[in-house]
Image (cartoon, rainbow, N blue to C red):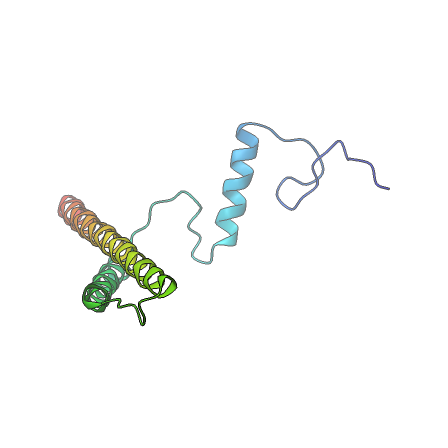
Amino acid sequence: MTEPRGVAIDRVFGPGRAAGREVARAIWLASAASVPDGVPAGAFVVDPERAQRCIDDLGTIVEDLQLGLLPLQRLMHVAPSEDGVSRNVARNAALMARRAETYVAAWAAQLEQTRDALSRQLAAYRDADEANAGRRG
């Protein structure tokens, strides 16, 4: 059986104890070295083209979800027979369809809000980028 070690041994800290700023610096340096473009974790980088693609994709997803709601809204649940079990199945199916409709509509609305928020953030980023470019150039 192995005993617990009194020191940390890993690729970032090596053999020995580390604390505070030393830990933060070691993590920052390790993350910077592991990213291909050399952008460390915590750095703010925006790729406007990828952000716009994400916004466009969210719009497509919202449209697909809204189209998917149409069959749910038209769905009728009729009991195949007059016995209690058939009526119970039809009643529960109708309840599940209403819940699904509510869930999908809420999901679509949240995605739409996310898309709109990302659009506003991207516009603000582009405005700030243009203003900064104007000051530099």
